[in-house]
Image (cartoon, rainbow, N blue to C red):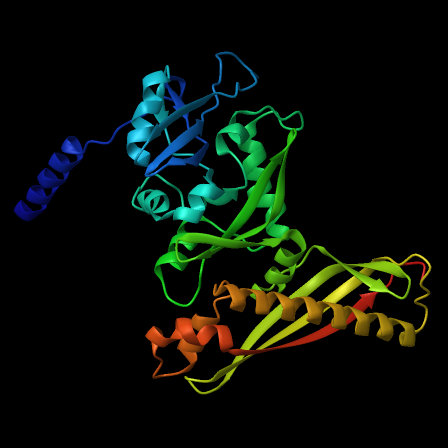
Length: 358
C-alpha cells in the first residue's frame, strides 16, 4: 500500500508540473503553406500563407500572407511574427514549396530543420516551384476559395494519380539514405492557375534536372504499383486512349555485385476509352493494339532509364535494390557503377475491355 501511495504521489507531481503550450483557435493564425526563394549568397526569402478566419458563423477565410528574408527558417519565422496580429502556429502545415533556384544550390538546410521539428506532420507535402514561391502564395486563384486548400488538394489528390506520392519524411529518407536520390513534384504558376509540370530530380540535396508530365507518368509505372491515369498511343493514323486499370512492377537482380543486371517487369491492364475509327471487334485487332501499346511504352521506359543514368541520379532506387540482393556490396563504388548498369525492361500489356459498343 505504501509503495502504491508513493507512485500515485509521483504521478500527481509529474502531471501538475508538466507544461505544454496550449492554443485557443480564436487567438492564433494557422500556417498552412510555406515557400522559400533564393535571394543571394546564403540569404533566402520566406513566404507564409496563414488564412484568417473572421468571427461569425459560416464565414469565408481571408487569404493572408507574410514575407521576410534571412539565413535560416527559424529567423525568418521570427520575422513573420513581427507582422502577424495573432500567434502563428504550424500544427497544420500542409505544403512546403522550394524555389528552383534555391533547390539547385541545395535544400538540406531548409528541409533538415523541418525534419527536426516535432510539430510538422508526416504527411506534409514538398514541391519545387519553377518561379517565385512568393508570387505563387500571394496570388488570387478564381477556381479556389482558399489557396492552402488548392495546394493541398493538388499535391495530395490530383498529382498522386500521375506521379509517386512524396512527403517531407520520405524526401529526407531518400536524401540521407543510400541507394535512391530524391524527387519532388515540379509546379509552375501560369496566369491564375497552378500547373503540375512533372518531376524535379535531385542528386543528393541538389536539383539537377526534371521529367516532363508524360515522363513522370512512365516513371510512376516503373516505380510503384498503381491504377488510374491514361496511356495515349499512336495506332496507324489515329490515337487511342487506354485507361490504366492496373499497373504492377517487379525488379529482378542478377549478375554480380560488380556487374549487376537489373530486369524490370511491368504488367499493364487497361480499358480502351477512345479509339475513333479503329474497329476492335476481333481478338486479332485487340492483340495488335496491345502490341503497339507495349512497343511505345517500352521505348519510353528505356529512354527514361537512360536519361536517369546519363545525369547520374538514381531516382528509381536501383542502388538500394542491388545492395539488398548482394551480401558483399561495395557502396563506395556504386556512384561510378550506376551509369553503366545494364537495365532490361519487359512490358506485358492486356486490354480487358474495349467498351460497350464492341
